[in-house]
Amino acid sequence: MFLSTVREIIVINPKCLTQYIQNLMPLYLAQSNHAEEYIRNIVAESIGKLFITHPQELTPFISTAFSSNDVNTVATYAKSFKYSAHNNEQPQFFAQFIMNLIQLIGNSDLSVKRYSLESLSMIFYNIQFRPILEDKVQQVIEITLRETPVKQELITAVDLGPFKYNVDNGAPIRKAAFVLLENVTEKYINFD
Image 1 (cartoon, rainbow, N blue to C red):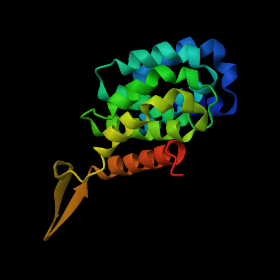
Image 2 (image 1 turned 180 degrees about the vertical axis):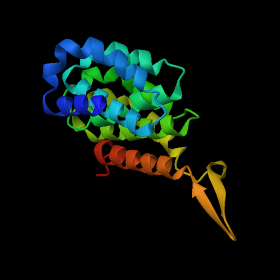
Image 3 (image 1 turned 135 degrees about the vertical axis):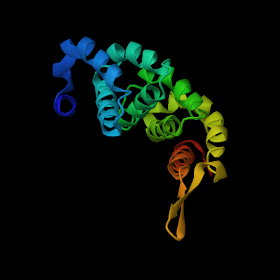
């Protein structure tokens, strides 16, 4: 309840939390590896929305999270950029995290991979980010294309009595990869 309440405050008036950032961020870092996914989602959204108005204060905490050995923490912070990139007009604060997100596409954890693709998709969608992204387009396309084929190792068969049901754990990753490729193509590749 506390995290949901703080998220609502962030959405309505994030500037009123300026004096509490140094107290909030350790709490978010601690909750970013929570066992419950919905808690991690609240944390990711809150960090992303806070990053819009407090990028300098959050940068050291995000850097610390990206160097964590905990995959849930890395995934949560990777996902947070999805909530801050869409209409953001301050690409300079994202510049140092772009390569982190690109490298995380190759992570073996499916959540880290998916959330990195989703965040990069939102970053590439925002045309304000063009100056910091133009030199990375080819690299992003090459890495992202590797995530588009169906990977048999991500498909598991579930027995449902006399029937078998295939669960494709790679489908969310492929979807995120195709959306990212669509945004890159739409914004950065000229077909004239």
